[in-house]
Length: 328
Image 1 (cartoon, rainbow, N blue to C red):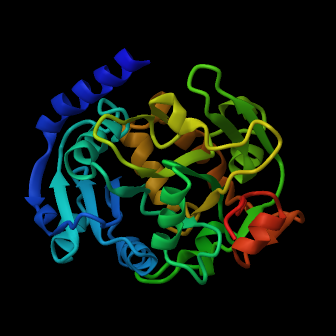
Image 2: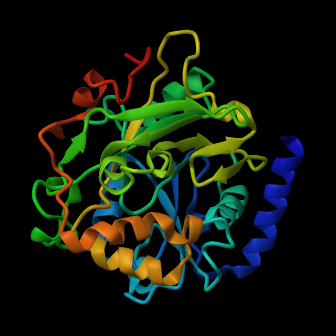
């Protein structure tokens, strides 16, 4: 595993040659700042609310890789005083779906910082997030010598057809996509890396009903006290060293955890799916998006009679989807 980690770090340095700094404001980063890293393409419509959400939470600086957007993403990000932007025309697939690029940037700029890694449709919810900033959580994690914080990816969707309520830039997408599956999740343990593997939710029951084992993974470790020796292995599903993946209690108790509200299913989804099928830059030749496309012509409704409407983090804890552990 140590050798595998060194190889990933070396690979990230090699793939960094594909990055070109558009605007580098990393000199503004202070010793105790919380940072956010993201790779994205053609997400300009989502960025105003995404940046506001994490600013309000306590993120001080954003390091974003723009993978050759054509919708004005780079120009918008350049205008934001707390954002550093790198552009690349490199293959998203051959960079291990952006992981190599972010591993490099985190190794260079995030050593010793708490870092969030999130896509522009992912919104972190953690215990007491309605009354305590992210700094309160990271201070507690530091006190407990905890280096990594997990969050289950929770797919959110509207009631009715996905395309029926147009999304406007700057809006909270959870105001529209406010429903989720409270059950139908499976959990297993990855014996190689020691992380949990979670599948299920609306994507499994609607798009992978006949092949649930191929449904997207929902386990994430999006908040880490970074060290330049660390490396993400696959998205934010797992890291090296392996000890960072032990974000659960194997003795019957509970460790604090959160949820990433995943606002993929808004009215822009069909166009995004079509683009990604054409580009073939996602896992398994964009097999996930092909599964979406097979159902999208039928205008599916993800809502069902077992759907729950999102209220707050306490509701998610009651449902067993996250935990405050011993953080009181």
